Length: 76
Image (cartoon, rainbow, N blue to C red; front, side, top):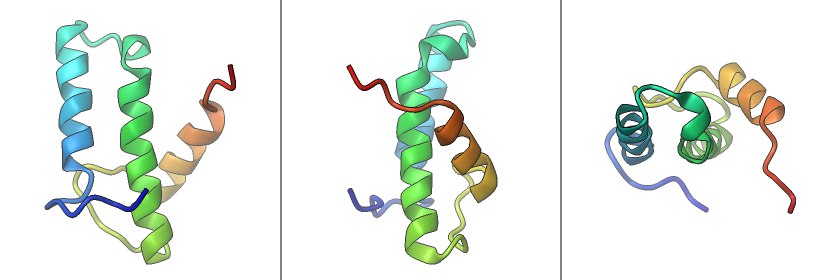
C-alpha cells in the first residue's frame, strides 16, 4: 500500500482518527483501527524515505514503530 499523495502525507488518516476521537469522547480504545491506519501510513512514509519523510500528521518514526509493535494486528 503506497503512501497516498496528500499534502501533508497521511492527513486523511489523521482527520479520520480525530473524527473518531471526537465521536467517542476521546476514548482512544474505541479508535484503535483509525490509529493503526494512521501509523501504518506513517510507517510507509518513513520506509519510503529512510525515516526522513515529514508530515504534520505523523509522530516521530520511533513512536510509530513502538506503537505498531505494542499494538499488533489481530490474527483472527
